[in-house]
Length: 142
Ligand SMILES: [Zn+2]
Ligand SMILES: [Zn+2]
Ligand SMILES: [Zn+2]
Image (cartoon, rainbow, N blue to C red; front, side):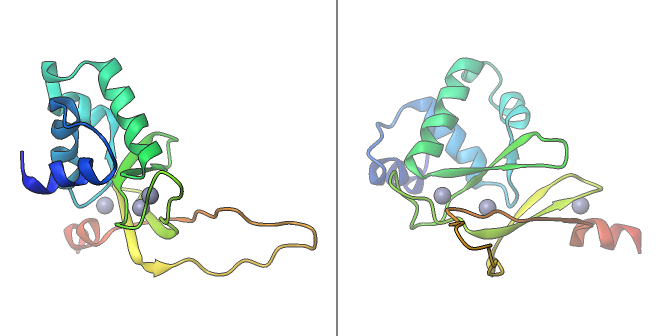
């Protein structure tokens, strides 16, 4: 349990329950987005499935994490930017899904391209996932 995790919960008005702290410490320790199955495995008996499901849902609603679908349609969870809150998410960055290891990277520094919509349409959110081969997998190949 680090201070960083308790602070994050406080900031979003959530009580510091052990399941929440456990989930956060796993998510923040990884550089890539995390699928629910990975969390289940890591948590073992410490957190049951229903609690895990609820925890992820709460975190998403409160602006602590955002969901990204991989190429198989499986949900992966990534920690949000500092600015995200219950009112609004600001995760308008590109995602990269590796076709070999299936990892999802948040590319925070890559801004999304502007899209031009036909008249009468108004964009509310946009998401872009690039598929390809990540740096790690590329270096294994060569
Ligand atoms: Zn967010
Ligand atoms: Zn890869
Ligand atoms: Zn992301």
